[in-house]
Image (cartoon, rainbow, N blue to C red; front, side, top):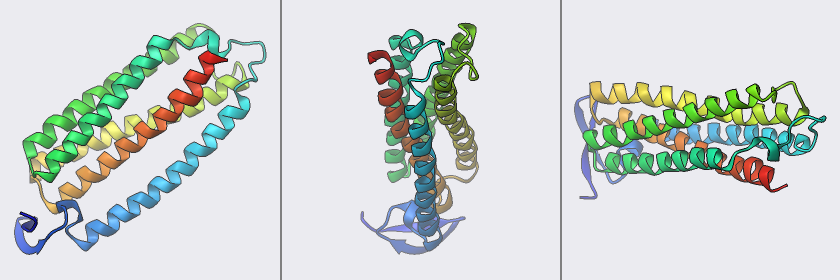
Amino acid sequence: MAEHALQTHGKSTEKSALPLEYSTEESRLKIFGFWVFLGAEIVLFASLFATYLVLAGRTAGGPTAKELFEVKDFMMETIILLTSSFTCGLGTLALRNRSKGGILFWYIVTLLLGLSFIGLEVTEFIHYVGEGATIQRSAFLSGFFILVGTHGAHVSLGILWMTLILIQLIQRGVTAATARRVFIVGLYWHFLDVVWIFIFTLVYLMGVAY
């Protein structure tokens, strides 16, 4: 059915052909505002990528990317994060079906994959520091840790944010407000996956290739 009754804070008030997360003007404005926020995030990461690419060859006699990066490690991180994007998409599909259980299941799987990704990234950083590749060792390492670390911090924030929204979903059910929040955090997660694809290509693949 294209049209369905909306349920907002327990009140059935209007009908809409739009997805539940777009069903109120407030939700539409907040989702638009979040796209604007993502635009600012794109500018932030574009600046960090540009800085890294300028500094990538300035190792000051320290370890190079080719000496540091392990293909199996960053491949595993990539597979886990891209898989989490897929499970997050399934959670959004469950949202379209207004399946509270489906949303919870797929977003919890996404959270677990996100935690696994952060665990691997922290292990990777600890290994590099143990090899003497600290953030102050060279301009290349400063650019690397700031870029990849900023992405990791965003993923950690996404995990915390998604956890809080799932708690609201459990308490309040699938309403226009919780649907909007689930949808927005899903957008955020997909954005982080897109950023990682650039890190995977420009930092890791180029690093081991040259």
